[in-house]
Amino acid sequence: MKFAPLIATVAFTGFLTVWEAPLKVINPTLVQASAQELSVNQKIALLTKNKGQIGSGDQLRRFFFGDLEPIGIQPGGAGHVVNLYNKANNVTFSYCSTYDVIVAIKKGKVAKFEPSEVK
View (cartoon, rainbow, N blue to C red):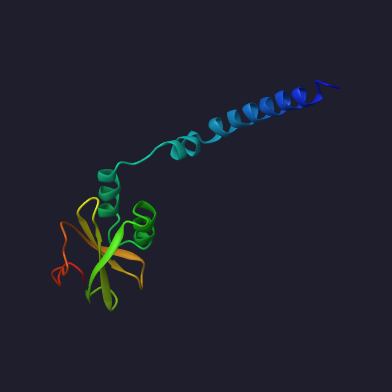
């Protein structure tokens, strides 16, 4: 009975190895998505592409969690928008919390966007 823990460990490891194979066959993107990391430029490009769509604010929070600094508020969106600056990448995002959308993105520290950009 000295080998029982060793046999159990080997059996459990084999079970996990066999279980991952069907997951890769069913949907390989599930396995690749967790391993793939987007660069900062890819994240900003994706946010620019999704600008104005509901949920783009959630993307912003996931991509730059803890790195955003509010630098201004102005009329726009559905009432007011908050301008959030990312110091690490020198990019300002204009965010409408009513609809959870990014309404404008610009390089540099922008305290106030043009009214036509944040409507």
